[in-house]
Image (cartoon, rainbow, N blue to C red):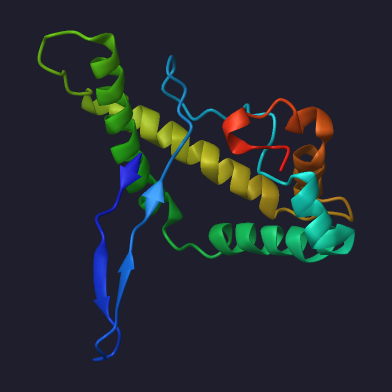
Length: 169
């Protein structure tokens, strides 16, 4: 997990301040070291959340805003690749150190080789950008996002979720 230190910001000369902490958590496969994209549910859309948003809210604004967000991240070049490389580099290194600690070897931790690190990070970045490009394309009435929404709302998929996510709530 990449943890960014708290940032204290002064709000325009007032006595109030804001603390901002950003945490990034990526599912990395322990064996291959690649991003794990084979989860049963792409995002959490439980029956209660679906009922709260209603069918119109899910099929309309939720789906449209997901497509718009993907397009904003992909179409204008805002150096998303560089930002993702920075974040994922730290995540891959931290995951490598966690795996070595789990093995319990008493040797000094070995550094991840530069070429292997670059290859793993670039592979993860390409996977993320590929998914964003997949979601940003809107060819017909049925978009790729609506497929993800259907998978996230499926009771068969929700019952296979990790119990710590409380998919039944």
